[in-house]
Length: 354
Image 1 (cartoon, rainbow, N blue to C red):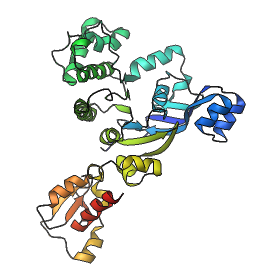
Image 2: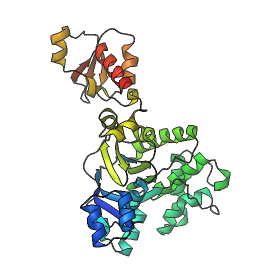
Image 3: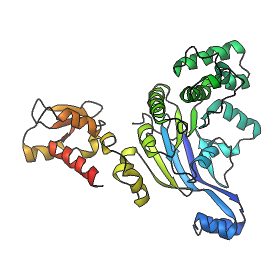
Image 4: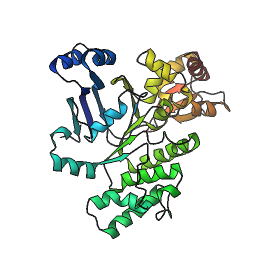
């Protein structure tokens, strides 16, 4: 995926969260001496939840935070809406210092700016689907007719038309998570926080909801922080990914950057199972036009043309029926590079050797 917008909307600046002992001695050892989580626990009775994490999220971007259990990803996301207070660091939302908000300002901020989707669905069992979705609007004091109208509109958006009068126990897991997403969207928040929203679902439903969420995101363009323990999911859903380990961010990059240039052995182990075919883009393997012509002569006039953001699988599919090179164009339809059959073969072989 590619993000259409630029410029930071969410700024995470050096966030550290320590549970337990936060004495000056403990904090100096953790922040200055960079001791491990195990040493912090054994020597100071301090639990490092998040350690000096910084990154920006652009408007409309789906930013995935990926890590195994205990990596700090869920702890981190709860700082954005101040469900947790950081020990150190700052969070800016659209330039506003979230840490500086008083109680009333924080409540308004949560109600209007942020929607959250949980792994456990967190639906109210005594409320109908329509009442679950309308709940954020009810909290804001919106009258019943208006909030029901909005809730029904969102029901259509998440493809649950006609299910408004049902209750949670009457829905499948996938349908319940659609209701959870609809509830988060009902108040039209600027930011979506999604904490492993699909991980409790079976694989087929999970893939279906990933596809639906990607389509919905392209339409609504909500700035999203998406937590997952599954790199396949992060690669599929995210514009960019932050990989966490032991409370620290190890690498931030596009799916392509992380798969092709892992920061260390830890990240490399994760990306081994990721197919380059759906990640590597034309602009990363194409050669300059003049370099091609020097080696092979003029480019055939009837050569296939494809976009610089097309992935390797599409390039291969389109090259099968032709022995000619593929000319790569940019968003303005200008020719910017060439990919030969040899370039495609090298890209495939490199992926198999890693």
